[in-house]
Image 1 (cartoon, rainbow, N blue to C red):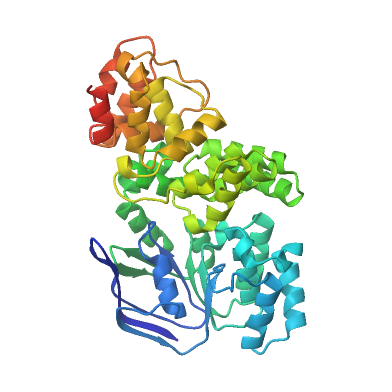
Image 2 (image 1 turned 180 degrees about the horizontal axis):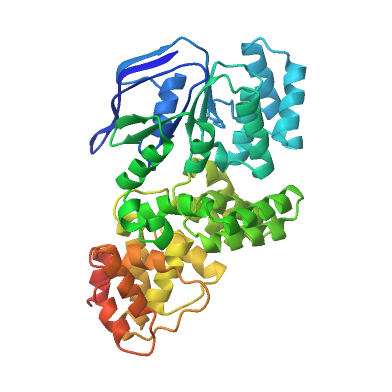
Length: 465
């Protein structure tokens, strides 16, 4: 059994204490699979790290009467300067395992090939996750901690992971975290919702999921269906659910994965780009798109996608080495153009990605397309959406002042325009303003833009000059 008794976790920050977990408690027995729902930053991964022993609680007690895995697909425990093979050897010795047998299994399961001979620090986050999951399967733990395996690899790899975990080890205890509620529904027999530091337990998935939709504002706004997320942070959260429920998105991603595995970089990039055009705030595949563009030699496009991934919440540490490489390959100094890591807070203060820049370019400049080089320069120079919008307004005559905005062609980021320019308005009113801005033949654009950027100090100051 695993027992958490009044577990509290507080992080000390410059702005005060951040209470991530507040007197959380539950028990988990063999054969129970607990699926945890919660929005980004709720503390789900923190709780998994506490259960694993990777971190200690600020207060409370965690009792472990069974062996517990490290978080599956988490590569943070690896020695980065050692190769994949040497890490397998090291872990085999710690757990008194047969190295040659383990190496054969990990090589076959992870499909990393010759990369196993390379230092782990050169791996992408997905490669580290594949290695971590494969190594996890050579140790027969009583309890497995599963944190976002769905973001790793292609559909075929997911099927192999599910077979190893849920068929071959179906009698073990498990704690699962995923952005895909359907994954938790299909594989768990207990459920929990982590929100505001508090944990609520449920026996029925539908009850738990309905409560989850309530706390992130989806039930009231039907955001998954209509895109009416109340702000940019919620739009990013909603995009993960919406994309995973979109069969077309999943098929495009699958085709991209197959092309990538076959070394057809340009074809894979096209598939990923098509998927991300459907759901531009779905962060997981921006890194894959960037990798493919990098392999094809499209370094500006690769840099844009790496920056977009970080703007949407991918850890900067996972992509920084690749970003520096692409900047250098483009002939520039990587130190002069550092990465802008993900920032919480109001939309104006958040780091812009591709969808934000394209939406603002249409809204402010009346442009329906940005070249790779132009987008790269915008994302390099501006660390907040407000700074980017202000720079666009200040460049000269533009649609924000004149209303001379062309009719939208192809995909227009209406969701992004609403949560950026009209976040201060109720979602329905914001949608009306976006529709008015999309009508080029009357005076509505001028009226609509007057309501825009109400809480964006740099942009408003530039507009009011």
